[in-house]
Amino acid sequence: MTLSIAVVLALFVAALILFATEIIAIDVTALLLLGALLLTGLLTPKEAFAPFGSDTVLTLAGLFILTRALLRTGVIERLGATLAARTQNATGMTRGVLMTVAGVSAFTSNTATTAVFLPVVLGLARRAGLAPSRVLMPLAYASILGGTITIIGTSTNLVVSGAVTHYGLRPLGFFELAWVGVPVAALGLLYLFFVAPRLIPERDAALDATYGVRAYLADLTIQDGSPLDGQTLRESGLGRDHGLTVLAVQRAGATLHSPAPDDVLRAGDTLVVEGQTERLLSGKTQLGVVSRPEQKLLASLEDPTDRDAVRLVEVVVMPRSPLIGRTLREAQFRARYGLSVLGVHRRTRLSPEGTARTRLQVGDVLLVQGPTRRVEALGDHLTVLGDLTSQQRDTRRAPLAVTLFLGAVLLGATGVLPLGVAVVVGAALAFALRVVPPEEGYASIEWPVLVLVACMLAFGAAFESSGAAKLLTSGLADVVRPLGPHVLLGVFYLITVILTQPMSNQAAALVMLPLGIGVARALDLNPMPFVIGITVAASNSFITPLEPSCMLVYGPGRYKFIDFVRVGSGLTLLGMIVSLIIIPWRWPF
Image (cartoon, rainbow, N blue to C red; front, side, top):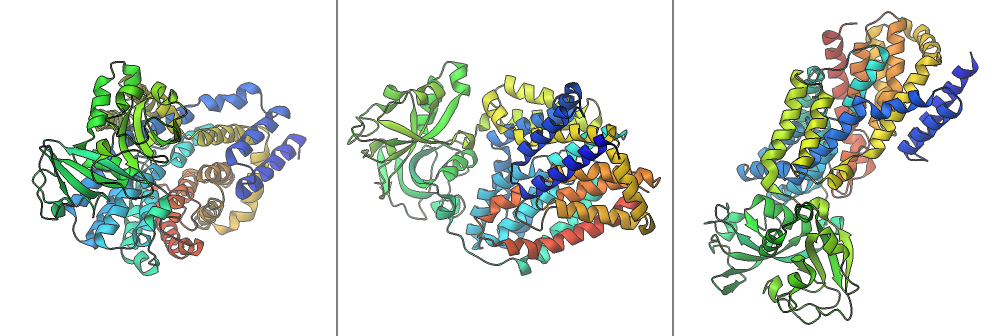
């Protein structure tokens, strides 16, 4: 064993320990690993930094931006709302949502899909009288299952596709994983439909306490063509489905307080509602209602830079503020600050007169929207508590967002353009056409993932060039040769599943990939079954709540760690059995 091999193997073991324990953040561990390779001379600067400009990293960045465009324009929320409106039966509703989530997750980040559908599913659960715990874990699992269908379903799939080219293999086809992903997802959904409900505990969640969000008083005006026009309050489902309490209805200068369930809503009515922030914002997206102050503000912005840099923030009214004791209209809030107030929150219950007629007090929290420069110019009398800009939805550009995303996917999937080229061009057009502001798009990129991927690709190059890969895989090959290829594939699948519980999916795949390919070649086997097996195993992280999608539902569902072990173990075993049957058939040894 040479000194170079010894150093690489030592770094490999150290990285495994740090990845598993997360004493240091995984992206920092990856950077330290890269730094060690540079300092020891195992990689030249050119070799070490080349992966940061690889098509894999740029494709990932572009996909994060295009996904953000879909989220910002409310496309996915609209899909969930449409499904909710068409399902009445609780069982059918749950199954329909899970199938929709799996389908959406095949083309977008499973974490983003879970985050967007979380409030939708909670609203549906409330409507059906189901405990949140009954539907949130299946939501997370469905998003993970859908991610195994296409190359862009998870970043892990894309990372593996880019990494295998460094070992002389072809990249994965856009739908190549679907041979395994579709059967696994289909059987996994059946498991979630019929088996999981018997294993998932029923625990109610105090939703307001779970999210820690404020309830705001807001004025929302029904537009022409809104689905609310002509419906009674009961039929509208504003409270049941959308979490909005209607305190009053303003029509033709008159105010109807505490409207009855049978009162009919009309276009032009202004509803004085109370609801959480995300409920108010999603309501504007789904219900055909608008905030008049917001409309007036956007209409007054002539500078496109201001229009694209509109922020949504929470501000608190401080002592000695000139707003105290005055209404927003009396204080000429919009003229004074250049901002619009979408809602008002107070610890005690507000009067149902609407935001314009509410006399402000010290400690009131205002949900404020306006250009960045105006927000930054607020004085000491209004203090910014938090920035909620990422929750805003611009539905006007939804068709454009869908066109850019589908265009990039279709061009990449059909081979008209390389996937990386199609995605990067799509992201550039999303910026140029103002579907998503550049600063918001860049903020949506998961930089730790990109750093991890680039550093591990560089380590893979050192692993090969030093001879460590050949030494390690030849030793492993001698040990596992008597097992046969089918058992060997199962061993690699199982080890990857185990590693991906404490480690990130991408790290587990990139650690196992050179070993799987090396052992396959040492045994004169086709490496592709092992590549596919490692990829699928790395994505099927169901046993613990450490997967980001599972962490999103862990608190709201009031789950315990053991709940994921009980429900996820069977799903993991099912996925493993299906994969080990299909992979050798589709990619022979």
